[in-house]
Image (cartoon, rainbow, N blue to C red; front, side, top):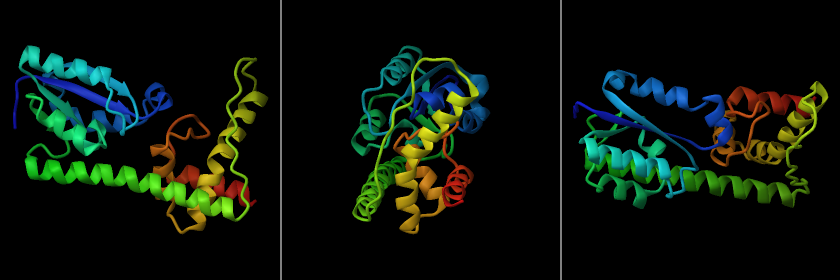
Length: 215
């Protein structure tokens, strides 16, 4: 599928990812081959399960007005909801996923189902692991970040510690249930749990927290 014009749509799950560029860089790398034909760009900072996307609506309207194709990096960056994905697919706008430019309806359907399945599995595993942790007597706190005040090193350290405390029940529960570091990071990112740096979780950052807690 080739087009003269593309309207780029990007999505990240959290404000922190949007501000830091985490997640956006990977999407931009995938769509780089089409850069010269991108006429506009729209971004939403929303969870993959949400279907109210103001910037996506603007992107689709832009495509219709210019006869352009909607360009996305991957199907799951558009949404993780099967019904919504097919609604967009049938909206009258051509869509090109950069990681699978020759994708037909069958593959689109498979990827859409898998995207929703992954969302549901992440939610299920997290809930089950947290319930197991609670049954073992783990205290499941969720402290909120401090607001205001001077941005001193001490306050920064305190915010980092609070981020760890918020993520720790999930990390410990999933780790105790045999989840890999990569899977734990994926769960934290999908549930929009902020990392120590305020960005995305990686296997290495999960490992650092585990080592720190076990020290």
